[in-house]
Structure formats: C-alpha cells, structure tokens
Image (cartoon, rainbow, N blue to C red; front, side, top):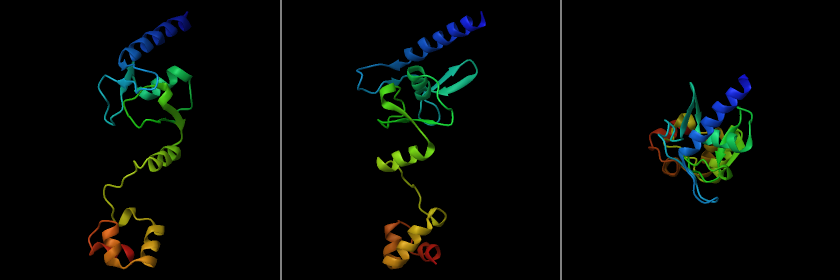
Length: 147
C-alpha cells in the first residue's frame, strides 16, 4: 500500500513540476518559469527536499542516475529543462564543456591562480611589461608573480 501512495505522490510532483516549465518545440529550450535559485538554475521542492529543476527534468525523462554525476546543458541555458538539451557528466566534463564553449572566465587573475605552466611560458617568451598586459595585472604585481 505504501508503494502506491508514494507513486501517487511522485506523479503529483511530476505534474506540478512540468506545470512550471514553458514547453515549446522539441528543439527549443523549455524554460523553468518559477523562481530561479541562487545559482540561476530552477529550484523545485519535493516535500522538504530541494532539487535543481534541470536535474529533476533529466531524472523524469531518463530515470535515476548516480548523484555524483552532474546534469549538463548542451544549450548553456541554466533555466532550460528540455531533456533533449541535457546530458550527464562529471565535474571534469563540465569544466571541459565550459572551456570548449568559451564560458570559462577568470574574473580576476592574480598570483594565486596563475599556474606554473603559465608562469614558465611567460618567463620564457615575453618581457615582464608585455606579460603584465597579457594577463591584465599591474606591472608591479607581475615581477612578484613571475619571480
């Protein structure tokens, strides 16, 4: 009996979830219309549990998956819940996807985020003045980072 009650509750949640999604053509983004969470992704509550809308959409369409995996967007639209635009990947896959789509920014480049490889390449190839302009830091901080 508990299984049936749980199943009905899950069906109600699924109906409620999809009522918050603006479903258009199959190839279009289906945008979450409720309040986006702190990270610009839709947030959906089932009882006391909050789940990202795109994760729920993927689970609803394709079934359960390992919680360690991320649900990534082919379309790069955080509010999109179209299962055809979603795919599973690891954190590394997400970072590669961001770099490949030119979405990986460093808002502030400073000594702490410079990689050893970058510093070595700069030391080998260009004078400090040019290096500081390349990575957009002051000339005063460039010698400190490159020494």
